[in-house]
Image 1 (tube, rainbow, N blue to C red):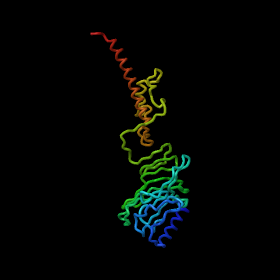
Image 2 (image 1 turned 180 degrees about the vertical axis):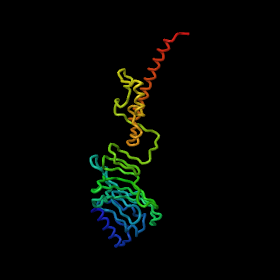
Image 3 (image 1 turned 135 degrees about the horizontal axis):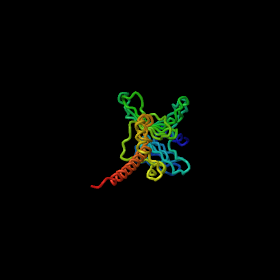
Image 4 (image 1 turned 60 degrees about the vertical axis):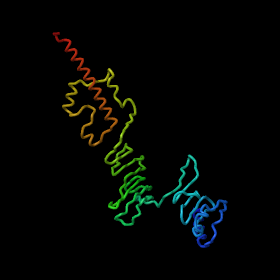
Length: 276
């Protein structure tokens, strides 16, 4: 803050003095990088911090931590270290019990007419809500000309780092990603924790394969296969892709065993028939 204050003081002094010569080199010996490229009036309005590498021109690019900025505002800092974050910009406002503490950056189309104005915001609710017990949340929102309020499109909350895309409830523990409508992707890979979650053991000799008459009775009573969730359970709880694929594999393997068993019985019956 001291360096910024000193820069502001320099701007005021140079603007009032209205000297006709470019500003001299700073105490550090670094020359004014704008000398010779701007008019004398503009050169007089340039503030170059004498204690650090900052420049605040009336026109052109502003540099904090650099005297050769390449954008309207460039902030530069040393490499820092691996222990601490190299913070270049800090946004904050006063804490509020209802969670209004939400410092944000807005990207607007610049139209002041409410009928035409649209904007994106990137911000963070950094105090949460003591009444509703909502978590602290980083979010990206959008408001179009016809939208009554901002629509939160993406957020990450402080409760186990849950990620939300769209307007979808997140009040279900055990999940990290919540997506509205659906996901379109070329590939999905589901990790399996261990071999016990797969069903190769169906082909072990000691596997208790349910006899076909017992399986028939189960199906007649329950209207679904053993171990497979009912339609009501799927509607209520959804489908675990990894678990469901494993269960379907189990049923295919059991079906294979049934086919092999029936084939042996058929071959045995054929062998007992008189040969023609």
